[in-house]
Length: 130
Image (cartoon, rainbow, N blue to C red):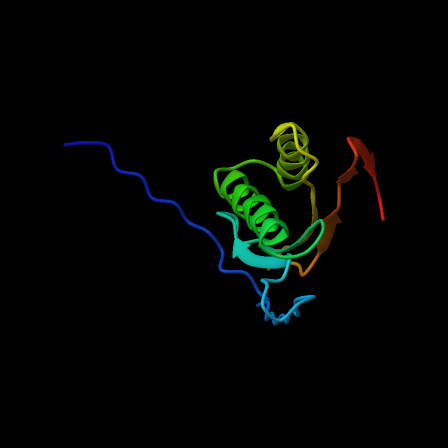
């Protein structure tokens, strides 16, 4: 027969509940702020917020791209802060246009309830922290 593998993981002692709300600048445009929550293969929960610079559809698209790319990197096994730094680099080189979105992340370990956060931002090609 073939090789078989079994992976055992703890389910964690804590659960995370989230809620969010958003409001656009103009009622007829989408909000440029987006959020996402997801878990990695270790059971850690990620709370991510992205603010597309400006307002409307373009800001919303930039924020959604940042969150989608961040989720894909983390869920493929990349460490949280490395994924955030890579997203920052991608946004800086994405196009010749000045298009930016922030990324703020909280990572919560469901085994211990310990949390860490990372917030590498960029403005006009230079990193800054809020």
